[in-house]
Image (cartoon, rainbow, N blue to C red; front, top):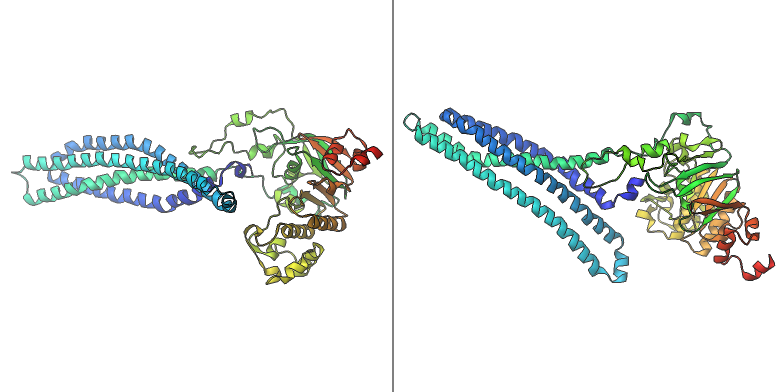
Length: 516
């Protein structure tokens, strides 16, 4: 995922549009042009040489001239082609950002600023393309000049040897010589264009050789119990992680244990590492310096780099003496489990409720494993059955991209229904109610307390109130475990960080403090 975190969308769009088009359409025609015009030039030289054999004396110097011009041209033109390809990415990126945020742009009245930014980026891209074309015109003039030398040579030798030559053959040779100029120009230009289009192949190959995340399936998966995890016992053992190699640790040497069916609230200030724990459980990010973290490291992603080479120096930036630790679920180190098996056996209600384009049924049961009756039952337990049943088609109702035809609260409830259907022993709530109103928040909390009472729940709190009834509270500060006790114990300690956070959130009043 670090690739998508560090790569602008415009750069990816550029690869899948301009570069793919050049590879699929332009490159084959350039190859055909080189072959076709090359054969034409060879045939012309043979005809002229057969008529005036002395003409072969000027072929080597002319050929050397063409090669020198081509070599002198190809290096800057290839670099300019890369600049031209690179300069398109900011245009695509800015256009995409503008489309996504067009309502905000209009609301703030900053249309002129975005228009000017688009003009600036388009101008830079146009300048790069113009420079590339001007270099091509430079090549055209030199090739035309050298081609004229061929006509001059053919005509001159024909005049000098006019007494022994057949007029018809001389006419044939001169007519071929007149056309060979354009043919040689085209063969050199086509060859240079072929070289330039190979830049697109290099850029595509860079993405083909990206390191992927760990395997979806591992041989050790077959040794796991079929219903793993059976209890939901979670243990962090000296665990540390970072978002990608070379960055600072976001979670530092934390250790704590969550008992089966225990409800744990995770609180802390912004940047304390709360969401990082969620990413670690799903192995979106790996333990620091682990085998998987290093094997999936891609180094810097630069549009200016024609090929990607991951150097050992990139990994040397990381302190090799750090031990990333491990996460265990029901006695199994999750780094030994395939990603597909691991993620299917964990459920999450995310902070940003995500729906995909498709039907309601496909969003609830993407693998088509359940009956409609089970889906309706989950919707009823999520307090959403009444609304879905009023929609055209019910479960077959089309969900728009990102679920825009549902409110944020309704999307959260659909995610809750999806979690109910998973029937896993571990549930993670990543600030699941941060973007919903108080009434929807209460509905979700009520359902969670009733339906997930036998499951292990990790709740990342946006509102301190939502975790006050948890069995334990995990307080994080700067990526480390600050406190891990029952909320009653933490509230009694006025020096605890949780007490200060609860007071800032208004959950503890001054009169309550005096009564403690």
